Length: 121
Image (cartoon, rainbow, N blue to C red; front, top):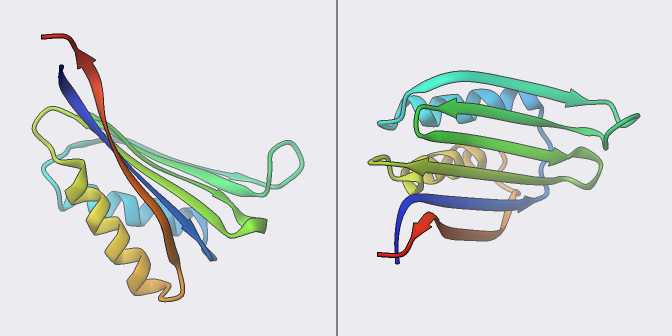
């Protein structure tokens, strides 16, 4: 089997932060990588129709980097998905460093890596 893509996920507990700030974290990590940002957006959820929190995404020419938060539970999920030459580990490591620097009590609960666009050879 071979793959064209790689997907890194990061799950955190103890998150206290805003969607606009996370979007800027994602964008700065992307800008320091070899990926090219094509669009960025954050949606805040007020807890009425969706759970309190946000979803933030940076579309890149090779896929996306996103973050989703359940604010009342303090949990944050980040994912970095690339297909091509950009290593998503670089982006994930940058995001993690920014998060820990800003929120030292934040706990990384799980980090996973998954091959994507898997094909038979």
